[in-house]
Image (cartoon, rainbow, N blue to C red; front, top):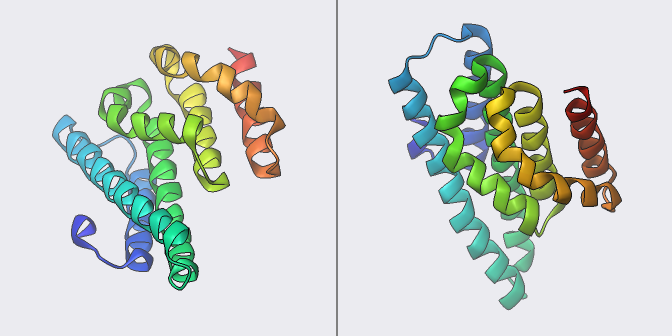
Length: 176
């Protein structure tokens, strides 16, 4: 049902429920189920990226439709954030076992970390970094090591929530 949902508000409710199920159930999913979850998250992020491109184009080229496109993009950012939260919850629950299943998801957050045009994109990418550091174990270091210079630069980001997320992640990293 999640993969076929058209309305962002309903999709967010469904994704919230999915995150709650992952939290409540603990590490009980089989490899096949983890693969299916990975495909679902990848599909949602692919759809986000397509809609994001469309909304940005509308905002830049259509003055009449810009306001609506901006509001729709805000809804899409909520979905991006929720997928990041679910990915982080999976890392918390499954640890290193989850890393291979999140490779496509990781590539999206890698892109938004370095090329994010909006604060929400950058912040959730930093939060994903934080989760990789905190819950991904030694294998996750191969993923997040290349992000560290970008993360350090983001300590100067104008948005306070981004800076807070950066400092948290660097603090967790310093513990290892």
